[in-house]
Image 1 (cartoon, rainbow, N blue to C red):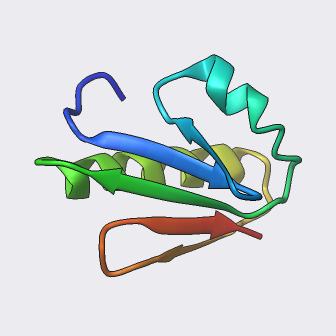
Image 2: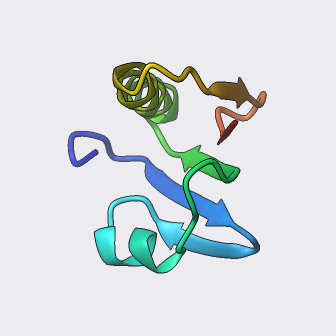
Length: 81
């Protein structure tokens, strides 16, 4: 995500992490299959969210188990299954 200038935040069970910080993401301890909120804000938010969507799709496609990704109007997304 370093090629984007937008701020990426991941929320799970009321806890929030910087989407660029692996340690913060791991500290969320979101189990597989749980629902998270992905919030992207900034000048290239739409492009960053599209890249995140593609990453999520490709990871789940490799596992042969499609997951649902619902987009909100403010370029955020709720990802989960």
